[in-house]
Amino acid sequence: MSALVKITYPAENQIIHPGGLSIRGIGPAGRKIRISLREFEWPSGFWDLTIGNDGFWDASGAIVENGTWNINATLIADLPVPLAKDHVTFLVMP
Image 1: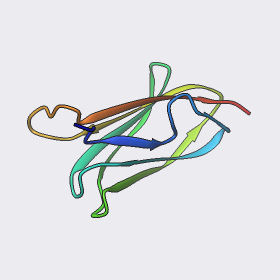
Image 2: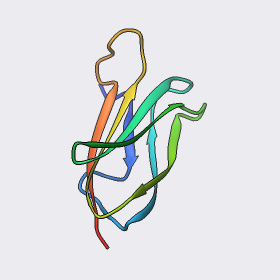
Image 3: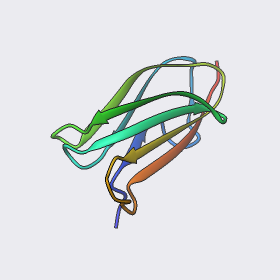
């Protein structure tokens, strides 16, 4: 069984440049997810959004600076759903 929610950008251990970040992924159409962005263990922001009818989602508006960052994407549900979350760690360097 594949994951219900998947972060497609940035990839695990990807190195990106500082600046604006658009986090993208896939999931079940019409469902709500929560995207959280952290630098190390310090919360930097989160978005609650609805996955589009095409199964794609995009969380834009974050600004990232040099360091190690983590993204969590979790399906919002009344009951826990197995494989309903994804996690990516990436680096920001000039």
